Amino acid sequence: MTRDQVVDLLGPPISTLSEDEFRAAYRGVTDFSVPQRRGVLDRLRRRPQPRSEPVSWFYLGFPEGKSTLIKFRHGIVEDVHSQPFERVQTRPRHEWARELVVAHIGRVEARDHRITARPAWQRLTSAEVLDFTLDAGDNAYPPVPGRIGGNTRRFGELTVLVSMFNASGPPQVRSLLTGGYMSHLFWLLDEFGVRLGESDVAHWILCRENANGDGAVHLSYLPAETEGMSALLPVDLLSGKERRRYLR
Image (cartoon, rainbow, N blue to C red; front, side):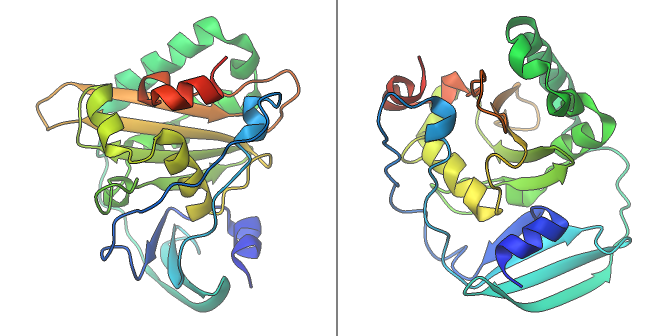
């Protein structure tokens, strides 16, 4: 089976791991420039080349009660290994972010009725999606300097990605996003085999410098449909060049 066939059957994985994960920082930036007359959602559909292989994808709860690691080489499944998994944790790891996430959703709903009217958007505050968002694991943190981390899961018509930063204000987060937020977002989408247009995509960025510090959250939301729609982007995390290219 290919990576795309696995995504079609199981959805995107909760995390990934490659052999070069801890050997080299994320280098290079893909040029996403396209004619300016095209809309932001069309521009967002440009993606960089896949990461180096081999790579393993991790699924939690597949089959039920087990965790499964699927190894790919050259884009083809090479090995599948499952083992029992028992969750002992009762509270999400990042319960501190719950009020921030809910408040952020409320602010968007107050100003953008086109996006928030979508059925997929309504799932953002469901118990299962909130628990996943607030329970992001260590893979959601940058694995190496300059490379964004992430967890992801598909919930029907909605795909959710979660990234974490040990940082506080937007300037500090921007300094960690080498090459700009958008290049990291595209890399992350390809990392998990998320294909824009097949589902709405929400990318949460949860930020807190330390356990006693104030936290902040940011959200990207890319609706699957483009007709009459626009993408929601975390303006505070965009570089000046990205604002000129993607915002109108």
